[in-house]
Image 1: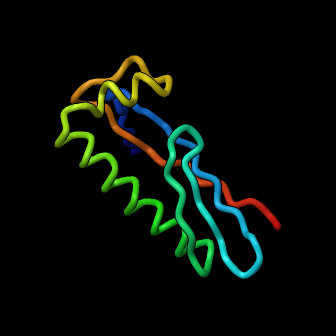
Image 2: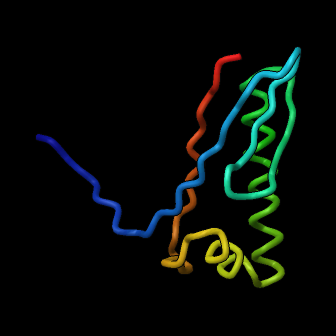
Image 3: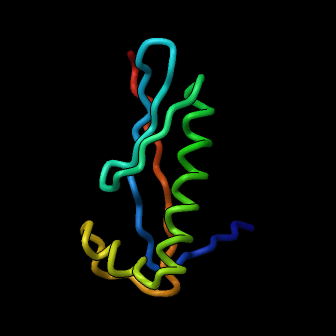
Length: 92
């Protein structure tokens, strides 16, 4: 038997780029001003997820997460919207 789950919740996807520069890796969210550094691509990605989470929680506590997401091109959002980070590792 094949079981499938269909997600009917709205989804916002942010593209994250992870790049190497010298001995370090940096990760950033393309539509936001979030950028972090790490010793490895994995570490930079983990730091970016933490920074994004902190950024989102701060916007929620200030009451402007929806407004911010709308301003960067995501008009159809609500309380049940899921946010996904899609990471791309770029070669040197």
